[in-house]
Image (tube, rainbow over the protein chains, first blue to last red):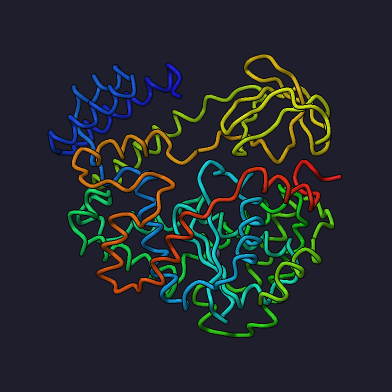
Length: 293
Length: 167
Ligand SMILES: [Zn+2]
């Protein structure tokens, strides 16, 4: 909820918008006015009525739209990575670990769902609205539940920080059409496909910015540590990947190099005073995964 | 500075204006749901059930537990992993919700309600255009519908001595 003074500031912001010289569309302005009135904010409604207008497409993408975008990206991730690995018990286990971490992450009020991709490469992906994937190859490399928790925490970090949505909002396609809504998707399916394909290319082929990856590494250990997992497990895991992957170019394209990632994780552990709890749960991990992998 | 940048700058200004309400030592429930207990172990009786975003006034801290007072005046202990210093943004923050309101005006077929089986209309049409197989559509559909009971997650945490069940 907005308190009185911040409502005032919000109104000031709107006036600034109006004076910034945005030209607009009466229909959107009317809708904004209605939305504000509908939410009981008569003052905001009046401000919108009396001032300029807003461009809907430049506002943050709402959760409902995020779900549609996430689902479309998820379809492409599944298609490109050999489908989902059909092991209900292992999938449930991965979901239990992931949801335990998500329970106390910075965006705990949305649903997170986890699936295993039937692929030998070592990778993990997060699409918007909490569609998270790990490859069978990655699970084979993981040695305990604390490592898995941090990997899933990293992916959850991409979702809490809306990294892919950020890519979509910055993309040129959107700048041209100024609209990513469901109405837009339904009316312009080809343009929607371009938006999704662009996001998938970034996610699967080019990789996100190094800054976003390092931010997710930090969040990964913080989220896993909040649940009580030993944060140093993630260091061990990244170190193992460094040994395994060597100078694999394809892998480094989508992930910043391991020395940067390791130092980001180490400094997070010391700065945030994350406790080395010793909780790794290696037995529970092998019991749940051994036969299924 | 073009219009887009001006717009974003104003948006940042407004978001900052809306989130600076905290003063004193206030924490917010960051977990989806959390229990306030009479003592600082998971075995102590529950004195209040809290949900995401609830504001709590800090009384004192002790290792992994924080003693807090709720808006209704109930005092108790909460596991520190369940709270954060900043108010959680949530599924839709106010600006995003407002943006959705704008876009809604021309929305035609909106998605199926939460929990219903079947892909969203827009992603279904994406699947058609991108040539996604039925098998892969079903996989994402199942993933979307996958639910795990809150109690099962708590039991899982308890068995692993995680979260507030740590020793
Ligand atoms: Zn990542």
